[in-house]
Amino acid sequence: MRVLYTLLIKEFKQIFRNKFMLPIIFVVPVVQMIVLTYAASLEMKDIKMAVVDQDHSTASRLLVSKFSGSPFFKINLQTNDYEEAVRMMNRDQVDVILHMYHGFEKRLYTGQATDLQLVVNAINATEAGLVNMYCTQIINGYNSQIRAEWFGFGDSGKIASLEIIPQLWYNPMLDYKIYMFSGILVIMVTLIGMMLTALNLVREKEMGTTEQINVTPVRKYQFITAKLLPFWVIAIFELAFGLVVGRLLYGLPIVGSLGLLFLFTCIYLFVILGIGLFLSTISNTQQQMMFMAFFFMVTFIMMSGVFTPTESMPTWAQKANLVNPMAYFMRVIRMILLKGSQFRDLSREFYSLSVYAVFMLTLAVTNYRKTT
Amino acid sequence: MTTTTYKHIIEVKELVKKFGSFVANDRLTFHVERGEIFGFLGANGAGKTTTIRILCGLSYPTSGEIQVAGHDVYREREKIKQKIGYMSQKFSLYEDLSLTENIRLYAGIYRLNRNQINEREEQLLERLKLSHIKNRLIRDIPLGWKQKLAFSVAIFHKPAIVFLDEPTGGVDPVTRRQFWEMIHDATIEGITVFVTTHYMDEAEYCDRVSIMVEGRIEALDTPQALKKEYHSKSMNDVFLKLARK
Image 1 (spheres, helix red, strand yellow):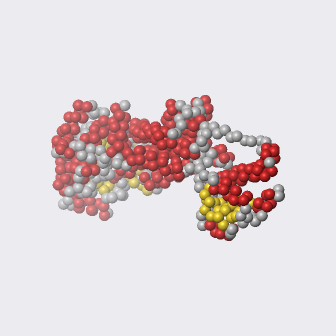
Image 2: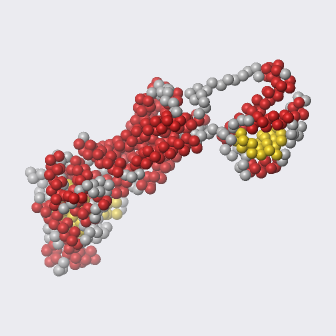
Image 3: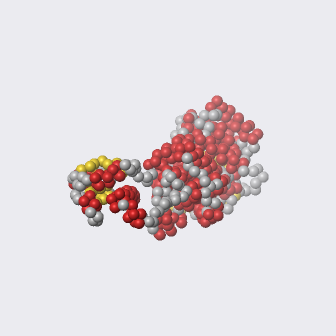
């Protein structure tokens, strides 16, 4: 105990003596929490639209007013010339073109089927899907209105006999920021846990002081505990700090039990610190370590479901996520914070992460060598 | 430590260390007497550091019988580590800790008690005349001071033997002289010194010297005997004659 205590004192002194450490713990996360939460949002606002109105009728103007009145659309161009609209799309100045042909109103009025064209920039498929959905909603609303006004209520009543009233659970305001924020918390805690641990270990190796410690009677478990424990504490603190910031900035809901969340965090961090330790055992320089850590981090993040639900990933990717600790924790943090899930809802994640933690730490500790 | 029954503090028989097909240590056999200053010389790449690392338990030998302070290097590395001190050519104190913090760290690792630590720390700083800067970070003090401090820390727990791997690399002649006075003082306290160096004038201070060439020990004796045997005026000449063979 005495030796461990001595080593822990040393680690904490070194960590907080490092000029970069406090900014890494306090400033970097706040910037991430603010910038990424807004930047990574998938909410659509100000969709840039070009209107090609070749009909110039009451009906066509009514449809345009539906779009210009919506907070989601911004009409950047109104023209007769379809080519001009296409040129603007090529220059990325519009996202969608609404094209109404000559005779639009006449055909509508005489009860014939009427075409209009909607051209959506689909380079970003997700965005295009959303744009398409918003447009369709507005056009459908316009359609029912026309039918009601021109042909009387009866007709429209019959057509819209099945009305869907959506109930949005867990996030009734469709606040995308809350969803993103919880994901960013996970990334932050992982980054601190994995990178700082591995960096610290490899740095000592580079400096040559690890070798000095290895000729002393310090036991492997003492050295490793002294190296991991500080970052375990710091990462847990980081989560608490992040929750406070989220609460203040975004009114982050904390529906479930904080105790349960921290229990999961403790176990999750064992996995992450284990990976950090393992990375440090297989690299000799900070550069090597950074490249490998970067690879793991990016893969973990992209697969974790921070942006896209893991359920909509292909089956092989879902299988691969069985070994992605971040995917578990991403699910857990959202279920606890936003849904208020209980331990019984999360028992599978709990056992998986526990097994993972034991496995990872064992692997890392056995791979750590005092004698070569 | 004084009641131990072993004859030589270091006993090496037929030590072989291979890295792949490269033989770094080729059937080394030698011993070190208790309380002597044993100079372990050789050109760069002769295999000195490899041997030291094996004796300290940092590296496994490929074969051979090796005992340090009466303990076997295969089975009793942890016991050996209680009894040795080590100062490597890579600088080994923590740059971001102060003098006092470094001393207390290593003292704590060897489980010295509070009174021992306070007393020895005071003595040490006094002797090195560093008391006035004891709270300064290591990175802010000159190399020569660091090296003297590193040596003092390496023998702070009064080990049976201390390994010094090129301890005086890059320091001025005055500091080197002072450093060797400290080494000499350590032997008076009963500590055996196992030292590698490139400076042949330093070899003259050793009780016995071995010269390693390409993984083998080519010569081992007192400096006087070696100079006589190789008809040389200085250890420098002895070294050149052997290394050029």
